[in-house]
Amino acid sequence: MKPTTLCFPVDPAGRLLLGCKKRGFGAGKWNGFGGKLEGKETFRACAVREVREEAGIRINTDDLDLIGFLDFHFSKKPKDDHITYIYMTETWQGEPVESEEMKPAFFLPEEIPYDHMWQGDRIWLPRLLQGEKVKGQVIFDDDGETVKHMELFNL
Image 1 (cartoon, one colour):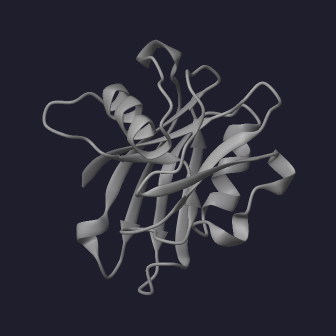
Image 2 (cartoon, one colour; image 1 turned 90 degrees about the horizontal axis):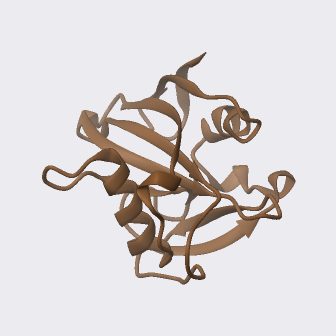
């Protein structure tokens, strides 16, 4: 399984910064910012790099709060399986800007576009936003979109 990260910046007004994926894996879906580790990079360093590349903001590794671990499994495409370290931060420098890969936007919790996100996000993301820390797995059906099975446990 590929090691990956996902980071959710939250501003002082409680708005979540998401990005709409413009290309590649998950294109057209809103998500946090993240991706695959490069070389001997740590999970925290990967999260910082990915947020900078995808949203143009700078985060210090010390400002990342590890809030979860999820394993994502794709029944028909096991090459897409990945383990994800999930972070949240309330501290960064700069203003979000659109990149080649992501178009960022802020959302209040009640405005999060779950209908345009990965199907399982509507289950685990609200728990993280309420302060829970979770670990678990999400197994997608053969279509790569429908959640076939999900297990979540509190950390």
